[in-house]
Amino acid sequence: AVQLVESGGGSVQAGGSLELSCVLFGYQFDNYAMGWFRQVPGREHDGVAAIDSDGSIRYADSVKGRFTISLDIAKNTLYLQMRNLKPEDSARYYCAADFEGRGKSTIQRLGPEEWVFGMDYWGKGTLVTVSS
Image (cartoon, rainbow, N blue to C red; front, side, top):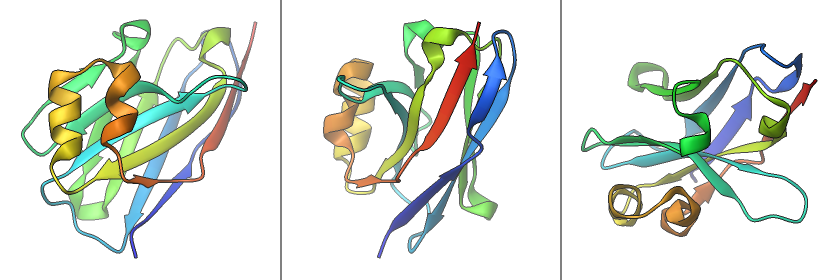
């Protein structure tokens, strides 16, 4: 069974950095769409950054220039490098994936608020807290 396991969350002060990792178990990266999402209480999952096997890389406007998504296929690991963190970045961050093609179509054609509809597999999340 496909399993995604996130790590790397924590508490930092504004302006600090964190790197999140997401290890994929039970599948090899092939025809993939992978994304990082975040959620705060009372809100839906918001797309943060996404990458797919067609070479598409996209970011939410709120994180452009500060966050970098990357993939190490040899390690079966997805990363999110986060710099210049702001208090409004505080959230639970989730890794998600799709290997059937719908995720790629969603990432390439729709906005970050709709990427969630293209993902089939989700991790349990890792908490990021940014203090001012």
